[in-house]
Length: 83
Image (cartoon, rainbow, N blue to C red; front, side, top):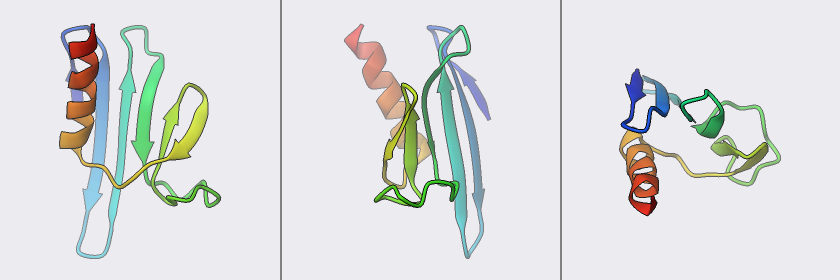
């Protein structure tokens, strides 16, 4: 799914759900296609305490929790309200 917001930032959302697993990636970019935040649970960072859940922001990979599209949109909306 691709969502374009009023500030022209874009959220790409991918989610796979089965009875045994859930894989997700929510990739938010500014209007110039620079990464703002990406949340995902790809199993690439086992040293993160919240493995496999993690977040990419400002060139760093940090802990995160299992997140839903609704939580991501609330996070993005909260940024719009700060402007």
